[in-house]
Length: 137
Length: 261
Picture 1 (cartoon, rainbow over the protein chains, first blue to last red):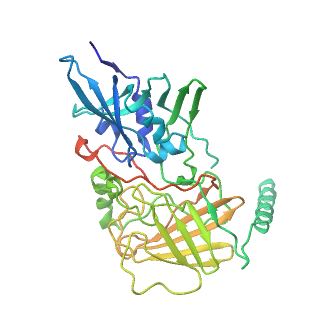
Picture 2 (picture 1 turned 120 degrees about the vertical axis):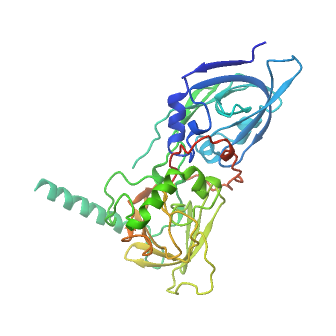
Picture 3 (picture 1 turned 90 degrees about the vertical axis):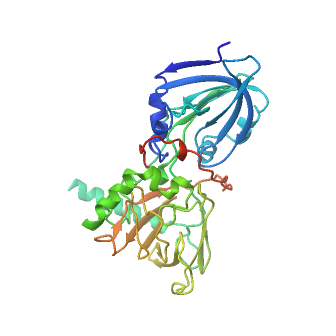
């Protein structure tokens, strides 16, 4: 069974934009922003920490059917999620359930990525998209 | 002629605005309140899809940016500090390696003035209390405004030792006694223990204006006055910042970086 679908290019523009003002390290220094991949597994933990929140997933790998891999995905900071109206509970409600994550994988090829989209078992999703902040000055 | 007329209209309008400012019992403008979160955040928006439909929401980082329109009462400013020639290579090197050299990246305290404007101001007759929400932890400052001098017994710190006074309708906060491990701005703007920061706060209608001047005669050719920032009022209550756990450093494969603040 194929659990990972790799696709190229889709996330490049968004990801560069997402990292351009906030992150000290370029996202491209750590993640392969040319490839957006999809992983389905069980959400096991949500760390609501600075400077990036981190979610943990247990996903079936491509090898033996019974084996599973532990993955972690970081994404934007807690203060950012707060300002766009997303709380820890919006992620944590999916703990123990199957979720599908789209993101960019770490260049060191560890089971680590930057989360760009998460879709929960009920079909609801949260996705980072390019946005123009409403600013008055 | 038309411009001169416009200028008079703007000046009269600004003057009327200042007269209508909310003031405390001692006659000073009231700076109290909760103000927009002013730490830089990613510009991306969230797209939330649910049974209720699709919603896209971005963030307002205006309080972190230089004002884009002229601000009444602002001091003349420049975009960058002027370092003495012998320190310019160091500044460039720090910035080029910012992902390794900037302590803010490693959950370090930004210090004054890099932390920016406070999230909440409590204005009392003899002191101002500033509250901050920051990635490194939630700082506070207590700033006497009763004419007392700087403390002589305080240890050097990230947020320094502050005393304030009023110059007309501006609150002027004088800050000294810093540790020398922070930067006063992105771009590798290091400083020494001689750094002396002057913060100015004033009201522009419903908004708060924040402008900073940094002096450090050991490394700068002249004090640097930054562009003013206009901070909108906020109704969002303060919330404890989650702990900071930096975990990216070991995964960085090069020095590529962008600025934060």
